[in-house]
Amino acid sequence: MKLAEFTTAASDYASHVDTLFALLSIISGAVVALVTALIVIFLIRYHRGSRAPRGETPERVDREIEIGWTVATFFTFLFLFWWAASDQLTALALPKDELEVHVVAKQWMWRIQHPSGVREINELHVPAHSNVRLVMTSQDVIHDLYLPTMRLKQDVLPDRYTYLSFNATKTGIFHLTCAEFCGTDHSVMAGRLVVVTPEEYARWTSAQPEGDDLAHQGEKLFRSLGCSGCHAPGSTVHAPDLHGLYGAAVQLADGRTVTADEAYLRDCILLPDKNRVAGFPPLMPNFSGSVTPGQVVQLVAYIKSLTTQSTGTTQGVAR
Image 1 (cartoon, one colour):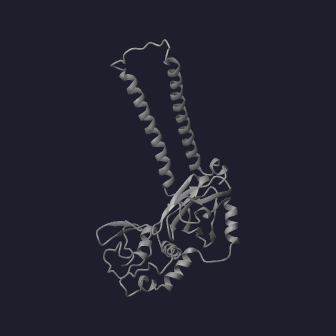
Image 2 (cartoon, helix red, strand yellow):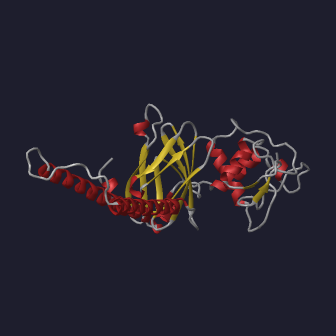
């Protein structure tokens, strides 16, 4: 990895991280300089044979001095903690009108799929000055997607979704890599983050081989797996209509209420008994081992495409 990856800030968040790091470096340097200066002064003034006054240690030291440096240190720490925490929480906040890109990590590569259906291996194209949200999962072990120029990294876990959001401010080709030891060829699990203008991104997308987008791929899979036989509005099976499900509140059989996000929809497909929906019998088959993580992404994309602007509590996936 080149040094430029650490000196180039290609997002607003990266600039905030660099500013905080510079401030911490200045404060740390000032403290080191002060301690070093005091050590040198004491060595010169109180070395053996010097005429410095020596006597008994005073029983009482000015409390004002002790209280002063303790309070100053405490409030400096609180200020730095607030600054770092606020930047972290801002980075975790989900952006509005984002471009959602799905990432599946696998020993030892990154498989990436855009909403249009375009797929990439170890390369991620994104438009500059646009909110990008990565929805990530692992097919095997724990990985960690690290974008040095964005000053961002996030664990990518099996059987879970994790998220990473950013807004690139510079175009160019940057490094991406795995920052979690994931096996023998961990060191080669790297790729490129390609940031282009929105116009170039549109041209690049249209130039890729034709293919269905994620939602249409998910719809075909939904029908081939027989899901439409239960979830179709006219089905005789006691299963809910999935229109308007994503993002809505779902009442569970154990009394809990959860939000139907990507993680919930994934669990409904792979772990149907984990969150059984109130009012529906446990009829949902377990598709764990029958569908791949990439196919789960397609199914979730299809269910999300059925979402309307409905509000309030809605029924969830049948069990």
